[in-house]
Each structure stands twice: as C-alpha cells, then as structure tokens.
Amino acid sequence: MDQRIMRRFYYFITALLLLKLTTLSCYGQYYFKHYQVDDGLVHNAVITILQDRKGLIWMGTRGGGLNRFDGYTFKSFNNKSSKLGNIGNNIITAIVEDTRGMLWIGTGKGIFKYDPYQEVFTELEMPSQNYISHLVIDNRDNLWFLSGYRLHQYDPKRGEVRDLNVSASCIALDKQMNLWVGNDDGMIGMYQSDKKPISYQSMVDQKVPRDLRSISKIYAMNDQELMIGCFKQGLKTYNIKTGKVNALPLTQDKHASIYVRDIIRGSGQQYWVATESGIYIYDKVSNKLEHLRKRAGDPYAIADNAVYTFCKDNQEGMWIGTYFGGLNYYSKENAKIKKYYPLPGTNSISGDAVREIVPDGKGNLWIGTEDAGINKFTPSTGQFVNYTATGKPGDISYPNIHGLLALGNQLFVGPFFHGLEILNMQTGKVTGRFPLVGDSSNKSDFVSSIYLTKDSTLLVGTAYHGSSLFTYNQQKKLSIPCLKSRSMYTHLI
Image (cartoon, rainbow, N blue to C red; front, side, top):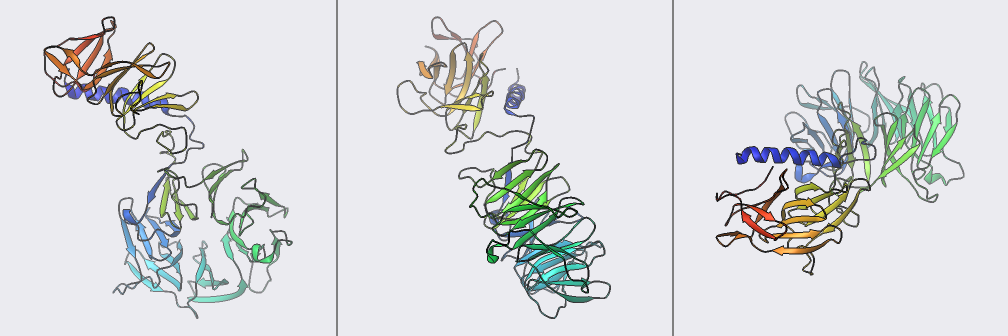
C-alpha cells in the first residue's frame, strides 16, 4: 500500500480513538485562548471590550490606548498626534456604539467619538475633562456617563452635556431603557428625571462599614430582576417588584471579600461574574457555581485572576479582559472536546506530543508520547498512570515512543532507536528487551510501528538503517523478515 495512503488511514484511526477521550457535555469545560503583547495587543491591562456591528472586537486598555482586533491582527489607536485626530488619552475606560455605528470612547480625560467610516476621532466638548468611569448608551443615542463619579447626560440632538447632580459609583440600563444608579453607600435606584429625586434601595447591610458598601456593577437579568455586584460584598440579586434582596454566596468562606467588576449572561441561565479573584459562573436553574482561576502550568486557564470585563460576541464566544493577562477568549465550540494535557500537581497525561493510541482488552487506552513515555488512561475514571524512562530496572528505556500495541497482558513498545520492548500491563514492568530487531542479514534498532493481523501475525515495521518489515514469533521471541524490501515503515494499518 502507498505510504501516503497508509498515513491517511493512520490519522483517521487515531482521530477515532481520540474521540473516545471526548465528552458529550461541555458543562464544566472552559478552555481559554490568550492574546497578549507578544501577539500584537498593545497593552496587557484590558478593562473594556466591545464587538461592533461589523464584528470587529474593540479593546480599551489601561495605558496603551485603544485596540481593534479583526480575528487575525491587532490595530492600535493611541494618544499620538495625527491628522485624523487622536484618542486624547491612553487610559480607555468604556466603549459603546450608537445606532449609526459611531463609537463613543470613555477615557481618563473625557469622551471621544470615533467615526469608523472616516477613521476620525473628535472630542466631546464638556465643561471639564474628568475621568470617565462608566458609559452607557440608550436606544435614542443618549449618552449617560459618570465623569468624576457624577452622573451626566449627552443629548446628541441638542449637542448638550448636562450635569445631573447625582453622585454615583456605577450606572446601567435595563431592557426598558431605565437608568439604574448605584452609589458608594451600598444603594441603588432608578433615575427618572433631574426634577424627581431617586428612590434608593439598600443592597448592603448598613452595619457594614461605609467604605466597604460601594456598588460596583448593576446588570439586568430580566424584566423583574437585577444582579448587583459589590465592592467587597460579593454578588446579590434584587427583585424590582417585591424589593427583595438575595445574597449569592460565591465562596463558602464567610470572611472572604469578593470584589465584583462585571457581570454578563452566558448561555442559557448562566451568568459570568468578573472579580479580582477570577471568574465565577452561576447557573440560576441548577443553582450551581463554578470558579475559574489562573493555574500554574495550565495553558488553557484564564491568564490572570484580576478579571475586569466581559463581551459576548455574535458567535456566543466570550471575550475576557484581565489586568495583567491581556485578552482571553472562550468558545463553546472549543469546549465540546475535552482536552488532556500535562498539568503539574494533578493526575494528568505526562507528555505533550502524542504519537500512538491503542486500546487494550479491559477498556483502557495506552498512549505513547514522543516526549514523556507511556500513559495508561482509564476513560471510566479519568485516571492516568504514567510510565517513563527513569533508568531503573523494569522501566522503559527511552521516553520517545513510536510503535505501540496491546496484546493480552503485554504491551509491545518501540522506543526511539532502542529496539523493541515488552511491558507487562499488570505490573507495569518491562519483561523483554530486544535492542535490535531482525536477523543476521538485516537488523534495526528503530521500531516505528507494530501491528497484529487478522490471523494473529505480529508485524514489526522498522525505519532508517535496517528498515524493513518483520514478523515476530511470540513463542521463540525472535523476528523473521517478512519482506525483502528496504522501505521505511512508519505506520501499519
């Protein structure tokens, strides 16, 4: 058979075996892709994210200005002189899009409008250019924002900015475009007009010291409920009709201080909560809670525990802004297949480069790697047992594994340039070693593939010097040339 065809068959069979490692449910599987300065991001502190109507992802950073990502490359806009204007400040705090596709950008000093068609920045004229901490836009393109932690409104029809004389720590719009205001006293209320005072409702026990009661986030869950994030006081829900406040414990530690920065709805009734302690995912239906944190040595965990902001894109993917770990991305599609990779301090696969996967007769999978020996994986328990080269008697001789075959209680192993070895799968010890495979006229120390035919003939393929195909006699424990060809056998099907 042509070697190219043989390779295709091999990859197909390997893919089928890998599917045995998957799970039908993606609940509880969160794999994040990281984008940082080395990938083109202008700054690793991402504190606001928006996907515009064209599908482009915009990120505001705390020190590097504004970034735009098209899925392939990043483009930066920062405080530099330009004939098209500039962003005015490299601290970007908020980004919103109006009905015409204009972007309004809150910064450390005022608000700027970006015209994506002309690629021009213009500054919004205000009496004072203060720090913009929050910025939202309603369905009439009115801007509501906190400048110096005081509520302001910009009416685009009149071109006027009004100071509404309300102190606030955060603001949010619900589904009916009602504006909700949170303050540093642990209270929230609905703003109706500058002529009518806000009727506040307490979200935090007034026994809590005042400097620990601040409201940091308000999120409309539905027509009747708000989710409230607090500074130091965690997460709560508020029923608008009944006025009932419920605490949602994010940890069993009653003394823990959880600083909530952002809230967004994921899939179904899952709510993602960004905190200084990682991401919490609360499922309202099952009342389950998951905590995602940075893990040393885990390339798929979130890159930093200080999570500032979320953005759900039009493909249901989740973009996460962190303070030190740049931009992180979660995709439901990527979570459908469970990943197995080396993770220090846990029971995991020992290598990154998987070469061979073979099943035994007891439901286990034996996995040969090119960098860390052999793994026995039991799908029913999810447990790994690692076998690697230690130099001790009874252990495999080399960590780079090419040929692999499970037969009865024996595992036939082809370590790179170390001949053929036979491992007892019950004891985990090597019971036979053959530094060279072949006969007196043709020998090789590189077993690249091992295969059992339908008539129980054991075939051993070798590569490089002495490359050939041999049959292995299990009773006599010797190899007999099967073909006189000097071809290189990398895989046998």
